[in-house]
Amino acid sequence: MISIKPNEVSPAKLQSYLQSAIAPRPIAFASTVDKNGKPNLSPFSFFNVFSSNPPILIFSPARRVRDNSIKHTLINCNATHEVVINIVNYDMVQQMSLSSTEYPDGVNEFLKSGLTQIPSDIVKPYRVAESPVQFECKVNEIISLGNEGGAGNLIICEVVKIHINESVLDENGVISPEKIDLVSRMGENWYSRAKMGLFEVEKPIKNLGIGVDTIPDFIKKSTVFDRNDLGKLGNVEALPTSEEITIFVKQNFTIKGVLSSDDAQKIHLKAKEYLNTNDVSSAWKMLLAKEI
Image (cartoon, rainbow, N blue to C red; front, side, top):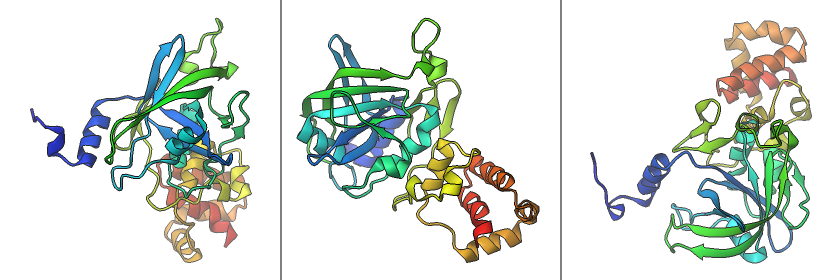
């Protein structure tokens, strides 16, 4: 067994040990607005429920390890003392992950991730319509745990209204663990799905993904692709070039018949096969081959 003192390893290494060992962790998909009302949406896995009467949730936006900067969510909570915590299930996990991309201040992560913002009843931040359970919260207190990169900031939230999608309730009106299909965070790229087990979600690229909002409508409106597919497609830095698509088609003889059929459904189903194996680049080339 190895033994480690926290000050003997780098903050990044220590963070990796902590996140991999203390898991699975529920995900707080936090929606806030800045002082001018502009929305922000970001997930946090340092999160849990700590009291039922009063109903208290706590999550912690940590300072970034690499440069000690703080996140927009923390700035907004300090400014407005309001937040909506949206619960994440499997159907939206890729879009949730995409929303964690560090877009510049003022960019709407609802649009980039392809999620739907709907008004709250009591607080100003928007709710995520696709989330099965949404908690409107007032921020009671924010406790800083340090000033160095990796230091957390405990945001203590009191729930003032709960919204529950009836589709996750059983015949007794209780939330069904199978129907809600929750996901939780592990270390590195790993997640856990309550009714399936471990799976990977590729982290958003260091450069900015194009976002779901820039995906062509003929793809977004297709009945073949689900929200997770769109999240994967939105997590690319740039679309393939015409030259890259041409090379792809020439090298893959099996797809020529699909492309020559002019059947959009068949093309989308083939692209879906690539997405199912996380080959997003080939999926994009398949989808755009008819466009060049």
